[in-house]
Length: 271
Ligand SMILES: [Zn+2]
Image 1 (cartoon, rainbow, N blue to C red):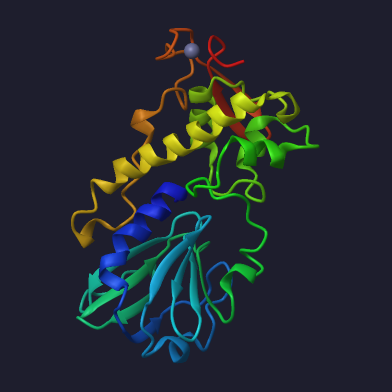
Image 2 (cartoon, rainbow, N blue to C red):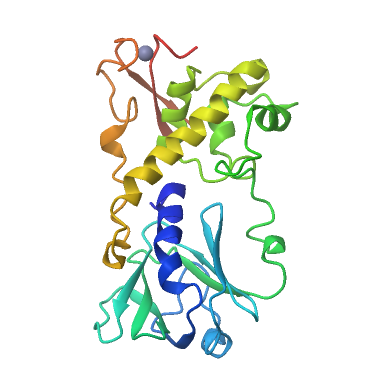
């Protein structure tokens, strides 16, 4: 599933190829995504210029004069730049044909992705307005996390993974960030000191940025914008490593079930 670093890597990879470009035409082959692709998408987008590409949580916003194209990659979606004459395959649902004979293609075997048109301030759209703190923004720090935790008693890992509180921190990144910060995943947010919140904020940001850096190296040409980035698993300290030695203290890594998810942690250095 594309996580925040993959979505941000996609955004950065697309910027030089889309911003300032005009959309010549739109081909919708399958409207049945998570929500139906609007019937008027072609009419709305034809002739529009992409002014900017922003990200909010795992949503991408392609800003145009008349509105914003809102894209979510769901479980298995990806955006690729392909030559106009590249024949579509079974799961290629939408093409935005750009000037310069290239198309931005949305491919998604499982069809949980979304492509919607938003008129008016995008931040107020129902899908975006409830989203929590952006971990890559400068406002994301220990004080902001501590404020957000006030009055709550949930386990810190659940807190981090709640998109209404903090956006885009999936299971792998939450596990890794907690290990980096030395905080036990089951610890209640009511029992974390200001200093440890600060350490956690840094750890979340570092973990995401390391993943971004890993993905960034594959973006030298547009052909690489295909969702193959984020091979972050190979660099994990605890995630998926039950029984192996903790790279920090050498203790054996353990796993536990938290809700529906497996959590990996080190009993030696996470308290
Ligand atoms: Zn350890």
